[in-house]
Amino acid sequence: MNLKWVAEEIAHYLFPNLCSFCKIKLLPNEMGVCLQCLYKLPKTNNLDEPNNLSETLLAGRFPFERAASFALFTKEGLLQCLIHNLKYNNKPYIGELLGTLFGADLLGSNFIDTIDIIVPVPLHPKKQTIRGYNQAESFAQGISKATSIPVSTNELIRVVNNPTQTKRSKTERWKNVQGIFEVKNSDAFENKHVLLVDDVITTGSTLEACAIALLKCSNVRISVATIGVVL
Ligand SMILES: [Zn+2]
Image 1 (cartoon, rainbow, N blue to C red):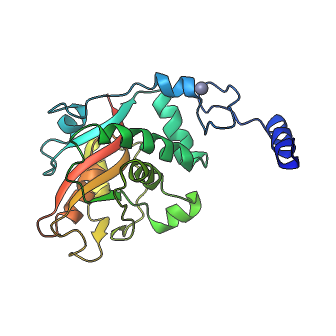
Image 2 (cartoon, helix red, strand yellow):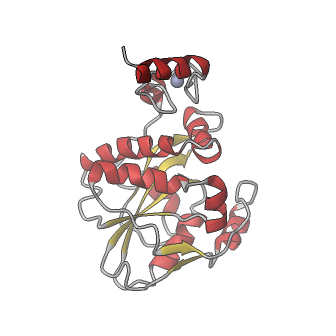
């Protein structure tokens, strides 16, 4: 028995690390969510399905190669709880964990065969400073860990800090995100197949606004991966 182990055991007893969803005490190797809850996630398992739910939602908004989401996002559901904790409760490791799991699924499909680079939807620097991290980037880092595809975080940038989208209609959301993203150097993604990554597909407005900025790079191709997709 060493002192570090004793200190960790005492800390764990005094400040138990609980599962974000079912609130049971986590085991030392569990991060943010217990294994039982992870197994219960409503995964889409539709990576190789043409016109899957994510592709149907984004169809006609911008040209893309493929789109897929890790799990279904339902009101009060397990994934909503995890994404809430990821975004607002200082738990970036939940994004990385889900990204690593999704990355393993991606490796088993032909979805990512031609992807050159992973690009998370950026937060405005002010918002990122307040939150301390970008939740889409955490997910992107997890995918990168599993697939060894690099992540780019400094070429696609958010130039306008727009207010929250949550209570807006589809048209209002679109007006709200137009022109808020820019690519710093138009040759950054030239001839590249970009995997654009976000937390949840709701209306697709934010992804569309990012795609419009990316499409200024010559011969760029875009695919999309998100943690959740709204049913
Ligand atoms: Zn749990």
